[in-house]
Image (tube, rainbow, N blue to C red):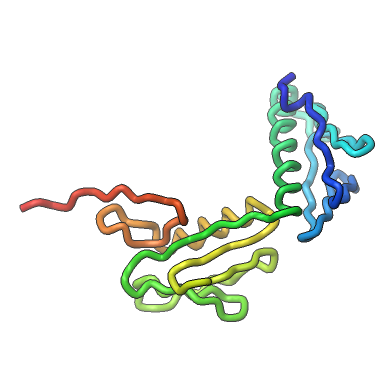
Length: 183
């Protein structure tokens, strides 16, 4: 058994945890999350214990190997959920290029990124978007996967190109520029 699997996950004071219909329901100061369970989870006193046994009905040929892998995954998901419910997750994007701008109008993020038209992206209700400057976007949410997926989706509209470095970049991303053609 791995060291991660032996640990009990301590439930923070301002978070309530319930197990209902093979779902772990978490409520905290910033909202609530539901995690569908594939392994057995127990709540003892103020701790969560994740077992390596699969929930009945999910029997597979390599059940033991899969259940140990899922055990570590669920422990990480639960810890990330606690972090998200207490402080949230933030991802920042920068628009690099002449005339590149972003603005939030109601529930739609409008991107002017060098195309002949304005690209409009509908913002999911679980995320909050801020545009402190016309060339920067800040994404905030309680689910780490949703925040990162939405940031990657926005970035896919204009991936940074390697010759001039123009495009949509993550805040700390550095583009190593290629040398152009010599004559």
